[in-house]
Amino acid sequence: SSRNVLAMFSVYWLEEHEPSDRELSALDLCAELAGRHVERHVAAKALRDRERLLMCELAHRGKNLISVIQAVARRSLTGDRTLDDAREVFVGRLCALASTYNTLTEEAPESVNLHDIVSGGLKSIGGIIDISGSAVLVPAKNAQTLSLLVHELATNAAKFGALSVKSGRVTGTWEVLRNGGADERFRFN
Picture 1 (cartoon, rainbow, N blue to C red):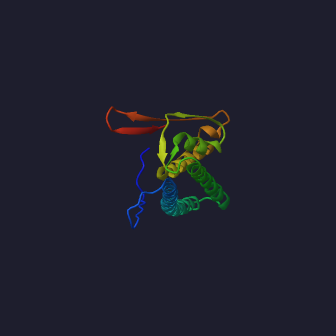
Picture 2: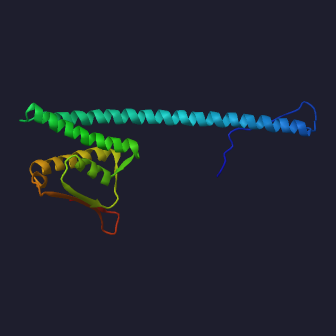
Picture 3: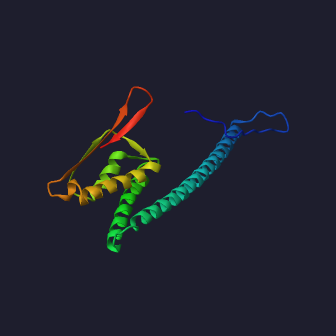
C-alpha cells in the first residue's frame, strides 16, 4: 500500500550536537506520537466530510421519497374509487415502495437487484408466480418507479388477470439484449 507524507518532524540544536541513543529514541517516540496525532486529525476530517456527504444524500433521498409518496397519494386517491378501495390501493403502493426502500438501505444504496424488486412486488399478491432473469442492478432512482410498476402489474393480475382465478399463474422474465455493440436493450415480460 502506498503511504503519503502527512507531516514532517524536524529537530534543531542551537549548537553542533551528536544526539545520543537515548535522545534519538525520545525523538522517534515524539515523531511517532506526532504522526499518530496527524493521522487521527486527517481521519477525523475525512469522517466528518463523509458524514456531511451522507447527510446531504439522506436529505436528498428523503425529499425524493416525499415527492414519490405525494404522487402515489394523488394517483391512489383520485377517480371513482370508494374511500376503502382508495385506501387499499394507496397502502399497497406504499408497501411496494417501502419494500424497495428497505432493500436500498439494507444492501447497496446505489442500486437494487432486479430479482429483489420483482419478487418483492409480487410476494404480497400470492398465487403461483415464477420469476427468472439475468442479474441486473437497477439504479436507486429507477428502482422505486420499477417497484411501483411491478406492484401495479401484480395488482391487475390479481384483480383481472391470471391470478384472479384459482388455477392462474404469473411468469415474469427479463433479459438484456446485446447486439454486439454498445447498444443494449432491456426486455421485461
